[in-house]
Image (cartoon, rainbow, N blue to C red; front, top):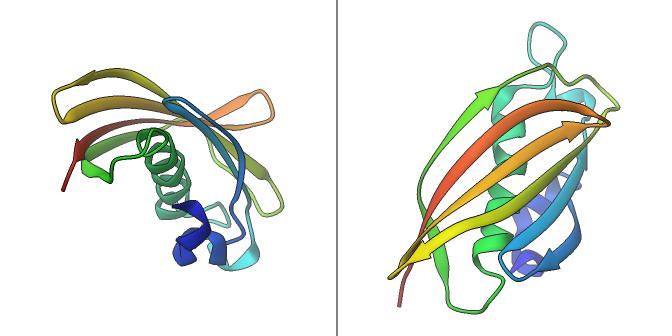
Length: 121
C-alpha cells in the first residue's frame, strides 16, 4: 500500500518499520511545510501520523480505511526536523479498529493521534 501512496511519498515520507498492527514512518520538515509562524503546519504533522496509521491498520492484508481520527499537538516542529510517527494497534473488533500514533522529534513528543479504522470490501 505505501509503495502506491503518491501523496505520502511525494512529501519524502519513508516507511521505516512495518509489523503486525504497527508501523513507523518518518519525514523531514521542508521549507514549504512551514506556516506563518515558521513552524511545521499541523496538516503535515497530521498527514504523517495518518500515513503511519494507514500502514499499521493495513499491515495484515484486508483493505482498511480511516473512519475518523483526532490529534493533539504537543510541541512545534521546525524546518529540518526529522519527525518519526510510531503507530500501534490498540484493539480490533469486527471490521473496526483503534490505533494510537505518537509523532516525535528526537525525544520530544510533537503530537498524539488516535485513529479509528474500518475494513472494507
